[in-house]
Image (cartoon, rainbow, N blue to C red; front, side, top):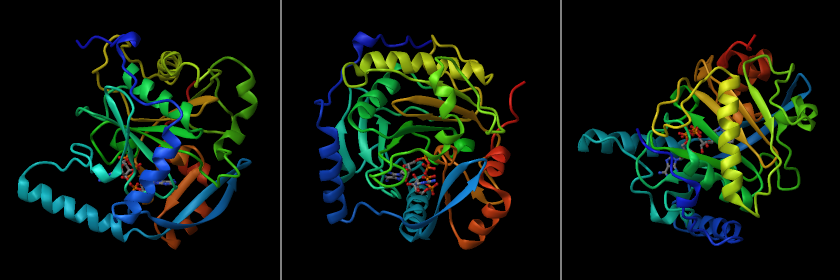
Length: 314
Ligand code: B4P
């Protein structure tokens, strides 16, 4: 059984206050050398239960589809599964965050400055999160206000097996950093307890966070790890908090901002061909074509989330 690394053993390597500029500079570099293959989208808002979902529709996924085909060919000829994070592309490298995690640019970003927080050594994406993961995430959230998230397993939207958390600075525009789903539970955030929101008809648990991220990312890491275990327990996903290498009991999405954490267990990857990852549960969906957009409007975004989530507890 792997021992949970003590907080004091974690070595943070990022010089505080430098991450935003590094992300901007590396984005420019990666774009200039053709390594950043951003996906172009248009968007609309679709409302249900007083949540205004930002729905992006892909204008072209060509780069990603082409890259995926190349990866499949490379895997077939080498007989080894392609791992984009080991080794990672140096042109997408942003910073060493800690002794265990690096920050990379998302090669196929939709949202500008979307970063990945990736383990240096291979670890499975469906292992539970540990102190080192939360320490790296806390360092990044202290530097960049936004939404951190984790697609816990393939059913929860993960397409890569190598463990990676993600962070998007804003879901809408830099002028408006509201996370759409927050409208469904903002009133619960005034209470220091785990809550559920009646407007969200699927199993979930929400906890407010009141932490000094900049002053002590490591304390924030310890508090968010505790909160993660409490939320897992609240939705019936019991994990052994002393064993950092255990598999997660079930797929789930984890969303974390400086002010709250939301955990949602998953039943399926998508519904009627519309795929959902953690960003969907933030109230930001991605559809691939006008037919999916039309179907989403008929169905209602919350009903889509209900289909890919689990029935509410109790
Ligand atoms: P995963 O956890 O495995 O899966 P994901 O975020 O759902 O993205 P996926 O890869 O399944 O792409 P999808 O078609 O759904 O994350 C892996 C991450 O690694 C992704 O961000 C991926 O782009 C990135 N990656 C893959 N190869 C890489 C490489 N060689 N170097 C660096 N990074 C690499 O979605 C396509 C894109 O849209 C993704 O960027 C995704 O993040 C984004 N997206 C999906 N839903 C969105 C939404 N609702 N709003 C905004 N963006 C969205």
